[in-house]
Structure formats: structure tokens, C-alpha cells
Amino acid sequence: MKYEVRCECGKPFSVTGADAGTSLKCGCGRTVEVPPLHQLRTAAGQNVLSPALRVETLLLEGKLPGTRKCAVCTRETDGRSRVAVECARGILKDDGSSRDQIAAGCLFGLLFGGAVGLFGANRIMSGESANLKAVGQDVAFTLPLPVCEGCQPTVTKPTELRTALRHIPDYAALLDAHPDAKIVLLG
Image 1 (cartoon, rainbow, N blue to C red):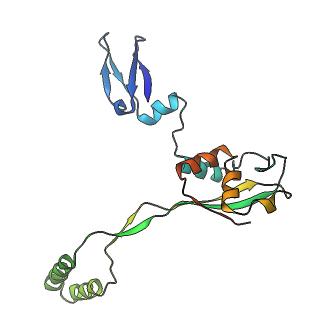
Image 2: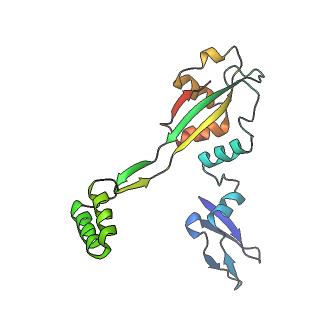
Image 3: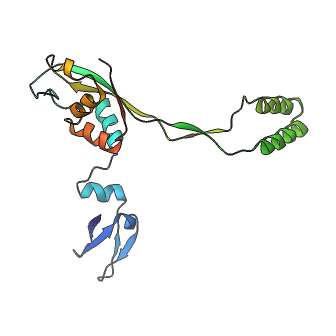
């Protein structure tokens, strides 16, 4: 995407996100500082936050769902259903350490650590210390969904819930960013 920055003399420059944080030389001799990407996006009216972070922020501020219209029939309602949306799960991955590397580490620990090193070696070799690394993070929400009493029985399956959630713009953006999200009605 192209963004515009201006020199103090008024001359416009077209920049991209890759130019963020750099400097340009204007024909007038001045240096034009290109703002960080989040400032360029804000100035262009773009959302700076990811949909997940935006939903999290709005939930904490009590601003969601942001409407009293039933997500099915659009009638005014104070009824709410709670919907669990699991967008992503962090996983534990083997960090690639081989048994030979572990054994060498144990030997080193035993030689230089004495009894403490032997204890550590025993724990590692017995598998109590895993060579796992956390990759990614959990992204899950409990979302309030406005649903009137008459429509509540019709919105119970994941496909129906997904359709209803899409009536709330911030929820729709979240589902667009995480199309494989698991959705479950909590009540």
C-alpha cells in the first residue's frame, strides 16, 4: 500500500510500508522522516490492531457486541448468548536436540556439577526435562452475541453461530483472519 508523507516545504512523497522509519531527501534540502508503519496506517485510516487484538481490547472495555440488534432477526434485544471462539492454539514442538547432545550435556554436568550434575543428568535422561519449545499462542475468546429469545433455539450449531457472529463487524473481521476457528455455543 502507498502512503503519503510531506516535507515541511509541502512537497508530497509516496512511500510504502517498507519505507517506514527511514529518511528521504527533499529537493529543498530538508530531510523528511518517514513515520513508523503504525503511524502511516493510522494516518491513512487503516486499523492498526489485528482483529484478535481489537476484539480483546473491545471486550475488556465492555464495548462488544456494540449493538442490541439480534444477530439473526435484527430486532432489539437484551438477550445474549455466549459463544466460545477458538482461533488458534499454541503448540509444543521438539526443539531438535538429539539424544547425543543431551548425553554430552549430562556427562558435562556430571563431571563439573558433582551430585547436582548427576541429579540433573538423571532428570534429563529420564525425560522429566523435555526439549520442547512453545510455538505460537492461544487465541480464544468468549464472545457475547445478541440473540433474542425467539431466535436462540435456531442458533446452536457452529455454522449457524458463524453466520450470526458475522453480523458484528469486529467478529466478522476476526473470523476472516481465522477462517478455521472452532465455534461452540456456551449458553
